[in-house]
Image (cartoon, rainbow, N blue to C red; front, side, top):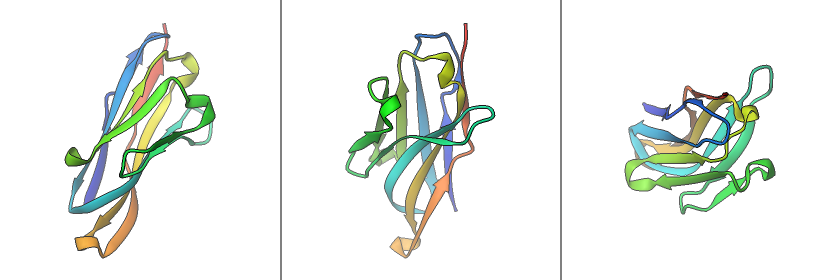
Length: 121
């Protein structure tokens, strides 16, 4: 059984910063790519960016420059540093991970439950 748990969300003023975490736990053999998504009220879930097991991060163009994705493979944890936040960044932020289990015999994409980020004065 594998779980991904996001944390670090909350209320922040415009221009502020937040750091989200996504911790994977359970019977993990290894983790390949991980990613952050977000879903604003009334909108479809959208990609924020992804990071490979080697630490190479890619971002959607609109997120570049303000958002930074990193990971600590030793802790099975991925991070999303968000700076200069805007009200339009308000959303539920989700993480996912492509995870090998069962000594490398099984491979699935797992999702976290999401964490709310609200940017408002």
